Amino acid sequence: MAPLTHFLAAATLASLGAAMPTALDNVKVGSTTLNQVRNTNYTFNGAVSVYKTYLKFGAAIPEHLQTAVDNTGLLSKRTSGSVATSPIDSSDDAYSIPVSIGTPAQVLNLDLDTGSSDLWVFSSLTTASEVNGQNIYTPSKSSTSKLVSGATWKVKYGDESTSSGVVYTDKVTVGGITASSQAVEVAKTVSASFTSNSDIDGLIGMGFDSLNSAKPSAVPTFFDNIIGNLDSPVFTADLKHNKAGSYDFGVIDSSKYTGSLTYVAVDTDPGYWKFTSSGYGIGSAAFKSTSVVGIADTGTTLLYLDTAIVKAYYATVSGASNSATYGGWVFKCSATLPNFVFGVGSAKITIPGSYINYSPVTTGSSTCFGGLQDSTDIGINIFGDVALKAAFVVFDGSDTPRLGWASK
Ligand SMILES: CNCc1ccc(Oc2cccnc2)o1
Image (cartoon, rainbow, N blue to C red; front, side, top):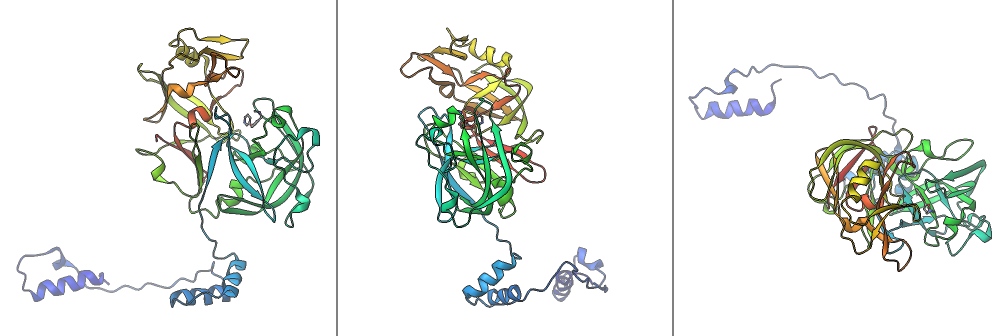
């Protein structure tokens, strides 16, 4: 059967005595048969059927019906959320988010870390002498906590800091989005640099599962547990210098960036958000097209790149030196540093020179430590917070993970 619209149009033109030939003239009115095919995937559910009838006729959904429908899990709700993230100090050393754990909620400030994949917390089980002002999670005070029998974890970070302990599951909510049975790795011991950092109550890893340290088997990340309920399988980072930014889940908020997003492929081996930058530019010098493989890591403070790039950058800063005393490139705090541009595809992200004039080597010193440092001893280039806070970044966890970058 020709589409009805064509048929009606032809009839109308004919009635108007339209003389000019139209394309409709050679429409042949015919017939066809569409055979119905059973949807073998469909399972009838009474509550869902009644629910849909109520919706169809605009009837209010009684609570018992909503609960019955929710309990089927058949109408998986799609959701999105947003959480503010604040620098923990005036140097933007790290960025924390409030995370609610347990019933009733116990709120801890966790470092959202795309460079690792353990959600671990200071707790009532942490060696007392290693707790110094942090908020703690007390599983015994949560009616929804469950010990994961036999599970342990131990994690070591790039800066040699460590923590370890046992594993519970509990309800975890971030930005209004809840994982009802999230693995919460409870610290029994933490290293000195965590103890001395009273602004961080633990980490929430948003890397890939292969980086998770739980034994005898890895436990899913918070992103793993919520991704199926998100409107879109993404979270985004909008970190800022000296002020609150945000992490969004399930949505890309175009009001948070300028221009357009440029996407780049992610290599998930060995578990980082690893991508290839298309090159770099120093100040007003010509952009150098070259592949720079690195990871987008919200849990690392600074930008770490290859020696050649770092040397070329500090060659433009009079008096800069790579100091054994201070463990990296330093210069006079009064120096004006050039911007640093890195490429993502054909796009360019500009890091203001002021972000690379990172902070005095010690409080009050006139010698400042660079926000760009050498990655040789690390073994991988790291686009840490110094780089990320110059951009809006989409962490796309779809079947083909990718990173989206935009200026802002
Ligand atoms: C600064 N050491 C303690 C500490 C606070 C937050 C983190 O987490 C890190 C450190 C390095 C890389 N990735 C995450 O370590």
